[in-house]
Image (spheres, rainbow, N blue to C red):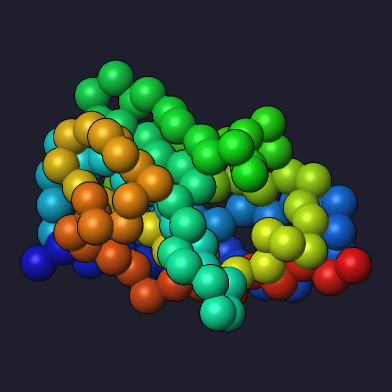
Length: 125
């Protein structure tokens, strides 16, 4: 059974930084792409970043490109999302998700079959 566990959320002031992490188990980590999504109250789940298996290509939505960086630690089966220059509009529950091999249409939640429980990120103004 695939399990994804997010950690590292919290409260930060605008302009600050935070790193959220996704620990994966129950899968061959090298064979999976890991994506990050976020969802604010009353909004749809937004795909913001993804890192592919094998070539570790990375992808970002326009809303976070240049501010967020995704990386993976294969030794620890963990993917990190470093978030810099945070804005109040980044406030949301952040989820990681897994799909086989490539990110593909990483912004589409339906492309991912396994999900974590989410971690809250709150950015105060």
